[in-house]
Image (tube, rainbow, N blue to C red; front, side, top):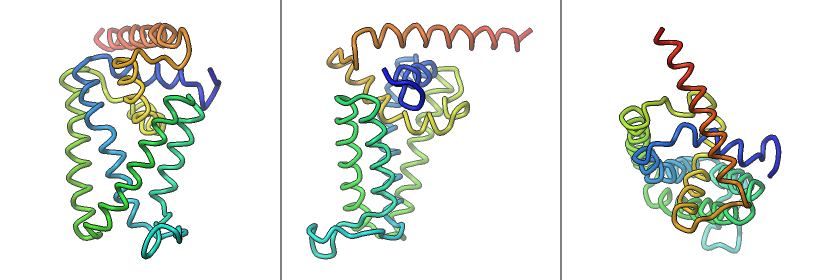
Length: 195
């Protein structure tokens, strides 16, 4: 139950207030991690900062893709040890996969594959918001929080649905109250704009 930057309830409630429609939630579960993964593929084409010598022929490149994955992984672990550890593992698996894919594709084909995947996944998310949620995406109100929280949010959502996971007792009840208050405030502001 951290405060400020690592206040999981606050982040989860912010993101959840924009994702209450079940179809939109499914769209995000499908598209968020591929956006993260393909971003890492693109970052694989940044300069290598260090090479791990024990990892094969030329060594495993530690570049901005690695930095990006590490920042996300650390952020998630600091927010919740159990789910965060799983999210961190997924971040590093995405990073390893991105090394492999970027190496196979090369830059000239890689950026085209990334662009196509990103356009497809972002379009799916905007369709989820426009057609089903009927609310603009969270990233329009807080870009950094929405982009940083999205992968962890959909993972927590899946863990809750599949395993009834709660970071601590009362977490989902507290978050639900905050989401409901935010949605009521949003509805009220929407009504004011109509009149």
